[in-house]
Length: 314
Image (cartoon, rainbow, N blue to C red):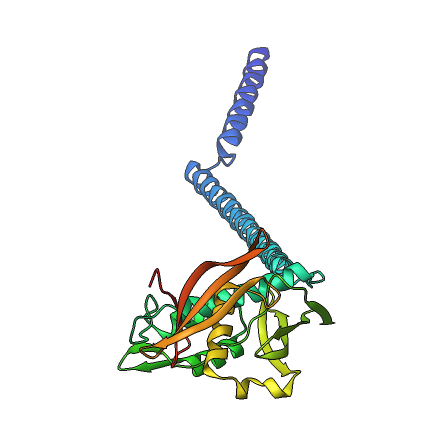
């Protein structure tokens, strides 16, 4: 009986163990394939999220760069505009401005008129026997020479009066030369305004009488030039209109040699020959109570053109 009870207990124990094992075997286990798929989906989801974040970050960076570029462009444009403005202001500041010239002195006024005379005779006396102008091949070249000492209107006036062009060749028109100042004699200088002066001188001659010459000088922004000349005959009985050819010849030689009427040098017409006056230039020399002439030169004056040439150096 005892043996059967023991056996029954042992059987119950065995049955209890089997039941426990079977229960353990029936517990569900995870499917390996399911875990792999879930892992891959999770990774894909993470990758998508990461890519979206990268895309958003890239887009944000692109927008930031674009904004910085626009800001830089605006800054460059602003700097360029400011630079251009500075250049314009600099250019305006560096533009040459015409300065008001200082007061014109008597010596400076005389120098302007002497330069005017030089420019005139450099052209008028530069001719051959047929009055063909030498060394100046065009009207423009003559104008440039005149404009070194005179205004454009005066240069045009003298060219129209003294210069003619024929078949491309330039000639001097036969005419008496203008009257010039005597540089050795005083002049009066009158200021009209900052850029205009009148320079006057009265010339007296035994044959020609007294003439007041007035030069209008202007400042052209670079230099003083002669703009206009006016002659006023003070002695109507000896006006230039009534001067003889010999008187004009004497004046022409005086102007040519810059001999003033108050100078001790004498200028006289000796005789005529071949359409020219032969003018004698000499001085009276006093020695031990006696006087004699000292010849300084002989000059021809063309009766038609008024051109002066040295007889000894034609």
